[in-house]
Length: 135
Image 1: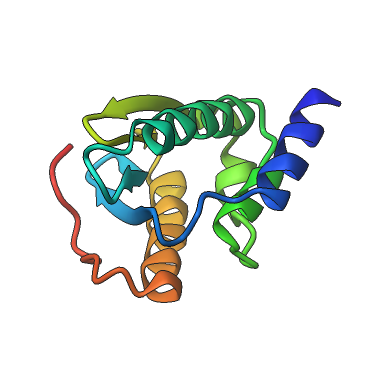
Image 2: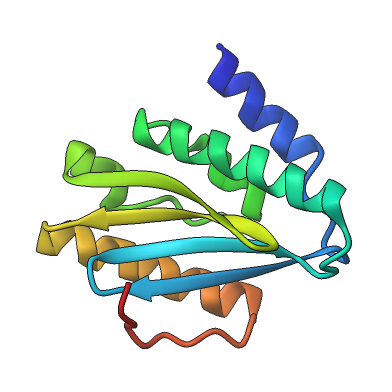
């Protein structure tokens, strides 16, 4: 119930678009959703980003992908959910925000992560690269 409520609250109160920047990154062993405050002085937004992304990583780790609504995506995490425990989800703090990292050694799960990230790069038009980078 709490995970569902948390996802619902994230949907109702998304991070303010004028205060944050999203990056979707393809990594050799998976991918990452990075969110950073646009202003280095905006401590409130940094704290909010970190709290929300920590919760997202926890939900994803339990197989609950309903919080992808936070990013406005209408594309389900095809293949990611099915991979189950083959994908590890971790929250990492960044200087101006944080990120949810998805890591796997499973080639099919990695392809699913890369497909999802490429879709998000196109949907958000963040100028991100669809090239795979080192971790």
